[in-house]
Length: 239
Image 1 (cartoon, rainbow, N blue to C red):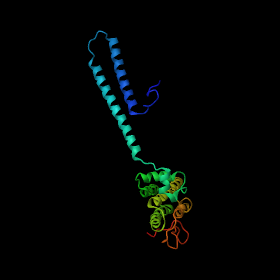
Image 2: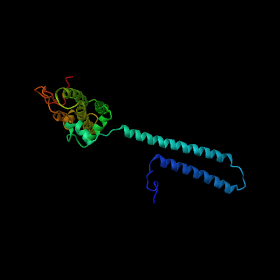
Image 3: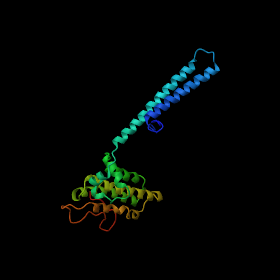
Image 4: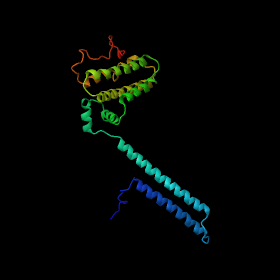
């Protein structure tokens, strides 16, 4: 019959590390003393250096045990603190976004939101990170304008469209995730970006965010536009 150790019950747990460290330290000390006795069979006293070695080994063993237990404790605390929303929770809290975002964006961003990460701040940091890499050019002005109308978009959604603030911010952050990836590729080609290169997808898909959330009864006759009177994108913000 196999015991718990053979079955791997303690594998990866602090107990297994503790037992291993004690066993290794004790074995090393016994082996050292045995060698010394073989070399000096008639010596009655154990030399000072062996006692010192034993004390240092024991201290090292205790340190490693405490370190291992502390790491395990911190890992367990992190796992307990980070709440990954279930599929049901996502459907209840983000009904307008189900099946509307690319890949696993919804699951990822919902997890961030559920663990108190400010998504709007994350969106701004995504914008700002690439903004510092773009050389002064028509593209840099359009990139800045794109953020300005994003703020206008969020205000418009809150006033005239259904959906919670959390849903709105998830949709906006998902957009900026795609936009920053695309602009980073343009920067790699040439930091002085031509304005026309920001007038195409995925940059223009910011307007699709509006279609994710039904209009409220108080919605104005005309929808919010991201294009200027001449059809240029993005227009300058009214804010």
